[in-house]
Image (tube, rainbow, N blue to C red; front, top):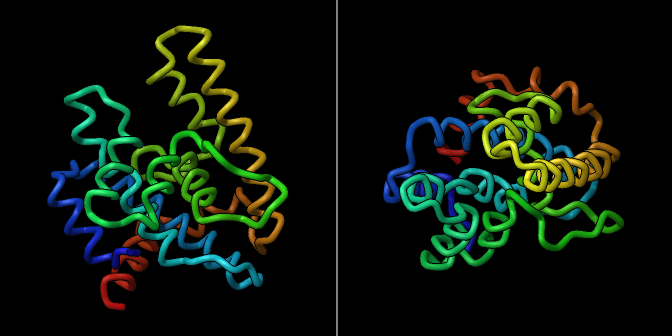
Length: 194
């Protein structure tokens, strides 16, 4: 089942998602909405609703993982499965690292959420380079093996960016201007009243 936006917000409350994580998720959803909508308008067959739900719930396991130290993307996937949200479970489970993808096939909801998450620091859209620097600083632990894996993941993200934006009529650089906080609130209000 693809959850409605209202169901997503109820699940955020049920799993006690921290306010800063909610704000991050809403901005990721705003970016994902614009990308998915633009791709759909360009003729691609994908679900904007599925993309939005995956983006809103991509960090549903994060609050609990801060206490347990477990992988928050896998915890989120399990939460989705426990709540019968099988259609978005893999989007949530692969938002940090894509496990299966093909750069030569049509764009997928999973790739959009993976990319949108990499463009958002806290609740602000940034460049991939800024996000990479933040992720390395926060999670790299000055260990070259970890930093190298993070860089490789962002190299893939750049390829996903090229794939997504080759079909869009706006550029990656314009994303921050298209998705400002006021616009995200508009998008949120629109989802909640649809």
